[in-house]
Length: 377
Image 1 (cartoon, rainbow, N blue to C red):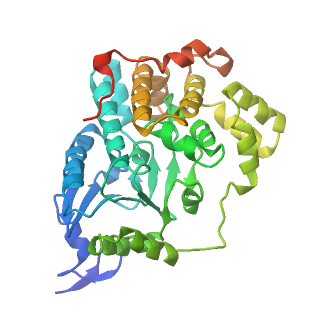
Image 2 (tube, rainbow, N blue to C red; image 1 turned 90 degrees about the vertical axis):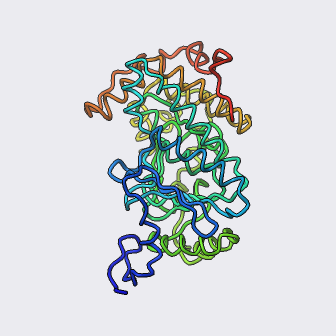
C-alpha cells in the first residue's frame, strides 16, 4: 500500500484500494468504456483529446449495453460521464459527417438514425440515468444527457446548442426540451446558441442538480455504493454545493427574451430586437446575423412544432430535418467556415432571412419515403 495523488479525485489516496483508480483500470484505448460496478452501469466517454466528441462506433457500443442494463433488475442505476477535466461531450463528429456527405456516404443517414434512437432510449429508460455534465456539453453531448432523469451540472459546465452557426439545427431532441423551458428561453437558446455556464444550467432548467466539481468524484463513489437511493444522494450533494447568493444571469433580460423571442418568425424577432434598441438586444441581433438564415427559420419552426409533439414524434421529425439539411449547402459551408478553414466567414445561401421562403422552410419537415423514416427498435 502506498499513497499518491490520484489523477481522478485529485486527492491523496491509498492506491492499493483507490476507488477512482480501480474505475480507470480498464482499457484506456477504447473510445467508450462500459462497466458494471456494484449494481451500477457506468458509461465513460473516452476521447478527451477530442473533447469526448461522439462518433458512430461509440453510439453503436452504448446502445445495446443501455438496452441490456435497462432489462437487468440487478442494475439499479446508469451513470454517464466524460474522461478528462474539460468536457463531458462537446458534440457529435460533424466534420466526419460533412466529409461523408460530400462523398455520398451513408454515414449521413446512419449517424443521425442511430444517434436519435440512442437519445430516445435515454429518455425512455426505466432505470435511473445520471449524466455528470462536468465540462463542455454541446450538441451530441446534450442528447446524451438532457433527456435522462438526472443531469448534474458543475461550475465547469458550459452548455449550448450552437448549431445555427454551422448551418444546422438544434437536433438530438432539441425540438422537445427547448420549447419546454420557461417562457421563450428555448427559442432564444436555439437561435442564438447562447452559452450557459455553471449554475445557469440549473437555473435555466437544463440541469436537475448542481454539485461543485471537486465533489464529483465523491458523488460518483456514493452513487455507486448507494445506487438504490439515487435521488437521496444527489440531493445531499446538491445541498452541499448550494450558494443562495447566486442568481440566474439572464434574470434581468428574461422579460425581453419572452417578449422578443415569442415572435412567430425570425424576421419579426429581428424587427423587435431593432425596435428595442438596448445594448443587449443589439448584441443578440449582431450574433444572429452571423447565423445561417435558413437554419434559424427552420429551427424556429422546429421549436414551435415540437412544443405540442410527443417525445417519440420529435425525433422522427428531426430525422427528416437532418436528411434535408444533408442535401443542402449551408451545413457543408458552415463546417468549412467554422471547423475546416476556420475563417468564420460562411457564405450562406440564401444570405438573408428575407430571402428564406416559407415553402423552403416547410420542405424540411416533409415525410421521407416509408422505408427511410426513423423507426425505433
